[in-house]
Image (tube, rainbow, N blue to C red):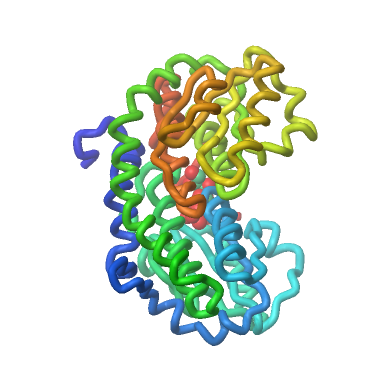
Length: 367
Ligand code: F6R
């Protein structure tokens, strides 16, 4: 049932061209320039009135929420807050019937998320679920929602569910922006055509970069710490890359917004520290390159995820992985793929049971 793959995690990473496609199939029409999300349309009055959208989730789903914050604010011009469910539920949050809560959960059973939503619902908020498991508790609690179509995720570390969440969140932002009139036809067209191309781009990464990523894993597997840095839409991907590495290799890793490193983490940098930069072509590129120079000057070991055709970042780095060029809003869907694979191969090299890492459960049904 692992389909010839050594682990579920690897199978699920390689399923992503299909699961990404499945998550927009029937919802995105690149020819008619249309995004259809009936769940969203069913609460459109609430969404159009809402002064803010609050995203509530945990772990990897929280990282998807952070990406969504950047996308929804940019495209829909509405304030978005992203909350850890466990913090949100205990701090007596100020919520009323004008609030829309976006709940993101693979399992639909995460206890902290579920209780946070129950509390918000009692206070009058509208709950919109982005859930993978059909009929799960969070899906049932939500007033409306959209399922991600990642299929069953067996590996404890979330991979394909995360990219499916990103797709649905992008569709959500596109549809809401259209309803609000905050997106031009041209931008809308660029983004949906771009999204339609993502499955083949992910496939390209998996096929052409696998050997490089394996070699990088082999080279750095003995490191005791990693730093992951990114900016803008790729900042949450730095967090996700670090989380994946911690979970399945037991190596300590931290993700940071690249510019924030000067405010502390740079003290960690020496000739033993691998620093993974997400340095794809986007408006932050020049800034990222200068952050890379700062690390290089302190002898950190640079590993970069760069866009096809890159020169500067690839040249600065000791090792690099290439991803296709994409609009900055879609870029996280591509840049996360090599980081998942890197963690996978490092975990395997360190003989970790990558499908069932110690101390972790697939769904966290206790707080
Ligand atoms: C990380 C991971 C966890 C989950 C978190 C939320 O790889 O799998 O961090 O993302 O426990 O779970 P869901 O999305 O099921 O609510």
